[in-house]
Structures are given as structure tokens and as C-alpha cells.
Length: 314
Image 1: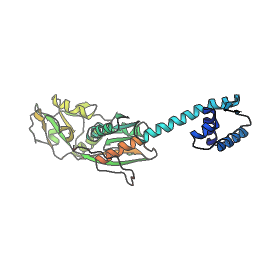
Image 2: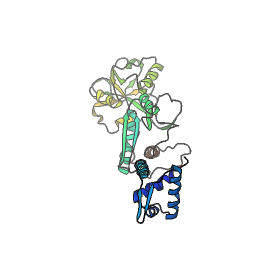
Image 3: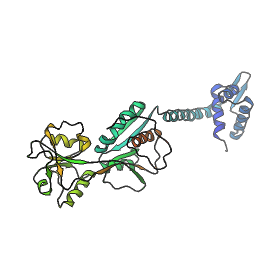
Image 4: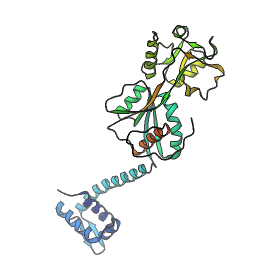
């Protein structure tokens, strides 16, 4: 059978309104065209679908059977069209972002406040993971994109964009015999307990490389699950931790001491990663553009601009 969607669409409205004229009005068409299409549909199916009456039509048993299936399918189509229309208007939708702890605090949280205010109907899911785990979620299609800290291995088929850099500093509590501005070298590092993240994280790989260049092994005495746990452990006199300067901006520094490193800790980047073969939803694309706008970045040849949102300085 060579029956196009248009014929079934017309049949749906004829059966719904029990009238060729009613269907014509609903479809902004004319009654002769509707009649002609329904005759063609009956010919293709090889059976009568309607019983013509003076005031409208009745469905034959075959027509009732066809309508039972068509109505279900067409209602799904109408619902899908309405959902897409709401998505285009950013009235609803779901965005899933995989983010490392540092990326969450330094990049994502400032944007989410304004995104939620502008689009309250959009649900945002944050998968707070280590850098390798965050990238794996995007790879499996479980997250729209990832925001992570270097270092990482870029999977095949991914594109990446540097958003900003971060600078980390060693911090300890006043319980240690160190003063603000004291310099830590390789010999002093061996005297104090260290707080760091586990081996499965990008931060562990970063500090392992940094310590290796000093001829040391990075072996934290206290292992934190996430970066935001390090400062509370430092405040509890558990050791020296390495934290981004962003984490210290609103911190009460009365019982904390910022130290110097010799050599200094290299800065590293926070990056956005996504799959080349997985187009973002309208809602995810809008959040992506707002993040890039805040950081003053853009993907190459990106035509669509994000909605105008003003961000406070951070």
C-alpha cells in the first residue's frame, strides 16, 4: 500500500468530527478535497470506512477499527508536537550535566542560579563526579555535556572547550608551626600530613605529576572524596590541603594559613566536553551557551546566541 501520512491525518479528523465539513474546517481545507482523499483511502484499503448520511457520517466496523489505531498514534503525535513547542519555548525540558567538584563551584553554580530564574520549567540534573567518571557519563549518553578540570584523556569523537583556568594553593590551619606566606619545598612537604583526593580523580593525577617533578611521591595521608571536603579537614587540623583560590574568597581565614609552594603549583584549566555525534537538546544548548557567555567563550562557528542574561562579577 502507498498511503501517505496526510491521508491518515485527514481520516483522523473526519472520524473525530463525524463530518467531512468539520474535518475541512479543522484542517483549513475544503470539503471536496477531503471527500476525494477519503475515497482514495478507501480504494487503497479495499473497504468502506464511512456510511454517508444527510447530517455527517458513521464509521463502518472497518472504519472503527482503523480509527482505534489511528487515534492512539495521532494523539501521540499531537502530544509530541506540543512537547517540542514547549521545549522550543524553554517552558520544560531536562538537562543533565556531569561536573567535577571544582568545576561545579567555579563555573556551574554561578550560571545555574540565573538559568533557573530565567527558565523555571527546565529541570537540571547535576551528576557530581570525578573527571574520569563525568566524561564516562557523557560517553554513555547519560549526560548532555561535562565540565571538568584537567588533566583528562579526551575520548575519540569528543570536542572540548577551555572555559577558564584555576590556581590552587596549599592551605593549613594555625595548629601547624607555619605562618602565612611560608614557603613549602620538597623537604618540608615530607614533614607534614597531606590531604588529597583519591587515585580515581584527575586531581590525583595532576598532583602526582607535580610531586614527581620534585622527586616526591604524592601519597595523601587523608583521602577526601570530593574537593569541597578538603577545607573542613584542613580546619580540623588534619594536614595541608591544596584548594583553588576560588574556594577561599568567601572563607573566614582567621584560622587558615595560605602557604607558598616552591616550585609554584601550575595553574590548570576547567573545560567543557561533549560528544560530536550527540546534538544537544534545546534546553541543554541554552545552558551550554550561558556557560560559554559567562566565561567569554564560544564554540567555533556557533551561530545561535544565548538569551541575554547579565551575570554578576564572581
